[in-house]
Amino acid sequence: MQNVILKKSNKQISGTVNLTGSKSECNRALVIEALSNGKVKVENVSDAADAVLLAGILRSAVGSDQLAAVHGPSTIDHGPQTVDIGPAGTAMRFLTAYFAIQDNEVILTGSQRMKERPIGILVDALRELGAHIDYEEKERYPPIKLKGSFGQQTSKISIKGNISSQYITALLLIAARLPFGLELHIEGELTSRPYVEMTLAMLETAGIQHQWLDNVISITNQEFTTTSIHVEPDWSAASYWYAIAALADQADLFLTGLTPYSLQGDSVITEIMANFGITSQFKDGGVQLIRENKPFSHKIFDLKECPDLAQTIIVVCAALGHEAAFTGLETLKIKETDRILALQTELAKMGVKLIENNEVYQLDCSGKFIPDRMFINTYHDHRMAMAFAPLALIIPQLEFENGPVVDKSYPAFWTDLAKLGFEVQEVEG
Ligand SMILES: O=C(O)C1=C[C@@H](OP(=O)(O)O)[C@@H](O)[C@H](O)C1
Ligand SMILES: C=C(OP(=O)(O)O)C(=O)O
Image (cartoon, rainbow, N blue to C red; front, side, top):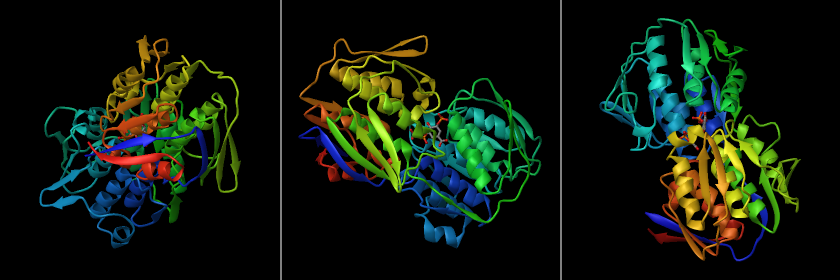
């Protein structure tokens, strides 16, 4: 395994970054493409390993030569059909719904961590709709066997909204393909709401209409229209450049392809980072980040709608000694790792605490110190590596466990850092 040593000899950053396509948008576009019988095409397929893997699996499943030409290699083993989705949580959830309505039998499995990420809520919903699904190992967790022969039993189902919006998106993506459509009642609070809005907006681009009244989303059985879906650059990936700008003394960064009209909820990073003195100027072809010396102005961040930004923002606050509080972090415990525990463990290496009290997480920087070197464990979580990388602007030497972990969503992360003046060295781990 390769580790990465990261250094930055000064605190200035300037240059242009071309970010890859959004993992979230691309995953949705690929499922829509696969369900559309060749009518919908995806443009600007993301380089994110999770999206490349999903593209390969769907290409094999659909068996379309056209898709084969566009996307990466197949990962389906054509004996007993076992599909290994590795660490890709969104893809796991989307494929569960996708395969639930196909005729063939498929075993869907993933990495060790994937086997600890719950799927029971989605399986319950799909079973109620008429799917035949078994658990292969532990009840309510992958791997699962999808046995085909879907026969719709009902169109009205209820689903808990506060565990993962990915279950809801998975159901919405297949809704128009269900003979009687779908009337989805969301119980309780809806977490990660912008991701559901993104799903509905992308379905609309593909010709699928919906109705969303109070907590009920309805989609009738409908045909996709012939169209293409263009995947925007990834705003979650952009957040690491905002963090770098926030920790620099001088920053002049241009991120290409981003617009203020994104489907991605993580574009809220522009507003959040305004609290740290980073101004976003949208121009033709991208966004310019400018560092202004303004006092820090925010004390509580609610991140329920943008959970993937949590690590970025918490690490920036810790680095700057801002004792902010954070809410809406409940879902972080079931992501690539328990991100709360991972943050607490790694921030402790610079004397910073993240303390929970009644679902409010408070940073305590009273014991903060700047070590000469810091080793960052990454827990198979791309965002642990990328969120801690900006610390190279204040800590002389960082070493990251498992550099390629970033491939999951942003494979060019280390090379982009090198292009913009960071010293990046691969070493044996
Ligand atoms: O639908 C999506 O593309 C995603 C939804 C979010 O998950 P939750 O809904 O589980 O919070 C987010 O964390 C994940 O990275 C991508
Ligand atoms: C949570 C994430 O991904 P997934 O759930 O798709 O594994 C993420 O990218 O931060």
